Image (tube, rainbow, N blue to C red; front, side, top):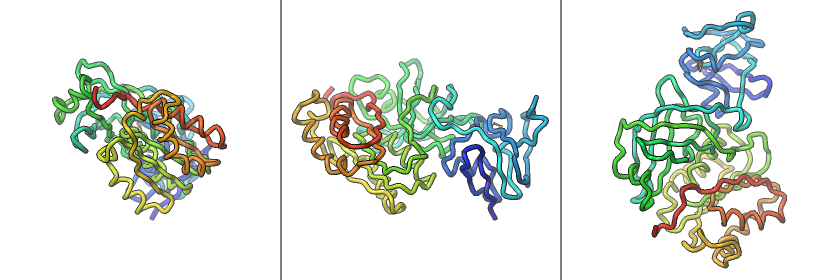
Length: 339
Ligand code: FES
């Protein structure tokens, strides 16, 4: 038995099953509602009941004060509905709606995806979930090394578990530490989130995503978010890499394609020189030619680019001729593999 809970003022809604709280259902379905501790102590998930009945409002330490005491209120992390409900909630619609947070997380897994790419899994404390929008990045500080901005590779719907992709980079002390010294249960300080490489959930335009190597990380977060929201629009991913090992999580692409009628992808190999070429260089032109059929077909689409800057500029030049919305993110910490 499930009940429909509608969020005001957005009108978005979620089906809440008998064994879950409103917050659990909202996060599962990719809604960016306000919350923090998820255990009834901070009050960030409080919502005003407009109509409907509660089945259970589990124990909480948070005390409603001021005007909240005079209104029917609930904490989404503690509440289960007993009927269809409408509640007034705070939802994040832009990066500016998400507060800056600093959280000490713990390393729970390191997956070597290839010899040169590692997927780092971190978990935040039980009472602190990092709020972010799919596609955003955070600064990671490990020991006394300089902070490193990394895109979150997982969906906000994953809750306390966060994933980050690191590519080995000779001479870089942070990646060297991640590859050679970081161990399970080490701590990493997260600070953020930042960045506006986020999805326009309200758009009904087709989506074209172009990623270069670990630019796949924020794109993966966006695609998982789109799937959790069950966005019906066609989504196409072009994933470029210098070597076949650069497509280090093709298994995700295959699984999305198998599970979703509206998802498709292609893997593209490109020259090393093209990645760092100057604007106008023929190697860049060759890459853009490779993308051209999809760019031409992307009319009236939202285009998300997680690629090196010069390639971004070359693609943007081509897109000028088409009525597309372009979201830009420059690939972080990019160096020639020989460096
Ligand atoms: S998230 Fe803190 S009280 Fe619900």
